[in-house]
Image 1 (tube, rainbow, N blue to C red):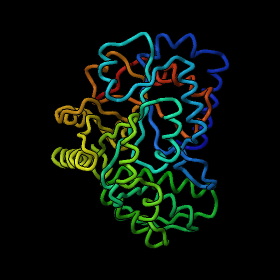
Image 2 (tube, one colour):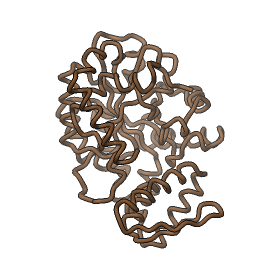
Image 3 (spheres, rainbow, N blue to C red):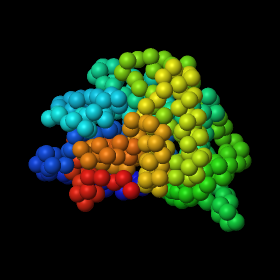
Image 4 (cartoon, rainbow, N blue to C red):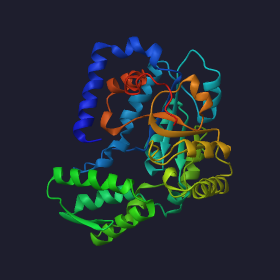
Length: 350
């Protein structure tokens, strides 16, 4: 989503808060509660060009968000409690907090906030990230564009040169390249980003090492009784881009490695990228057949009783860096924006 679109949506959410639309709608649209999605929890970096800012919230906003949820009578529950809560609802909405990818700031900045609120949380971890072999290509691409004044990229048989002297030019180039790469075969896309990084002197491995937890750090956070470590694909590959055998290998390799390192087999899974183009019915069925209790997408929505039959296709509510405003979050927690967006449909599992 572009900055302009994000600003427009934030303005809309604030307007809905002013008129109180979420209040009268919540009883019908909130459902049973929400599984919340985060990535990084960190102080602002101060960088001018940083599209990944949407994946970052500050510790202060996380604290405000949890305070709001408690004030709105949400009950914080762990992932292990989600299936039972869906099958046997209570009168109180629930909030289940999840973080993707295993960023170091989850340990340094998020954990103290969760402890202060006694809020359980889960981290979906690609094992290669904790190994030090993680490829956070989207952040590498961002770093290349941030540092370069010109970029020539070959996608397939076509080469295109981007001028990158202004913020607007960098934003436009990033939007075009990011989505072109997301739609490509993943190893090929990563190879393109690696080549650009080499050409422009960006150390991709240093970016990953700075941001991602090691196994020792994962063990530290996993030792906290509030924490659940859950599965991702081993290399953070999109499920839909793999054939079934490859996908099963990615998932089972990850699960086995997490069990080996942490002594506990993961019971929950998250689809990397998680949108409708990255994971669909075929993948939901496979994850179910592999015995996971739940699996989450990045499809947007609240949890409803109907999800009892679709435990491996659960939607989430993103704590988005562009919407660090408790008024906007209060409206989102009502479920009204999702009901409008989904035209009243409670399920999006195809």
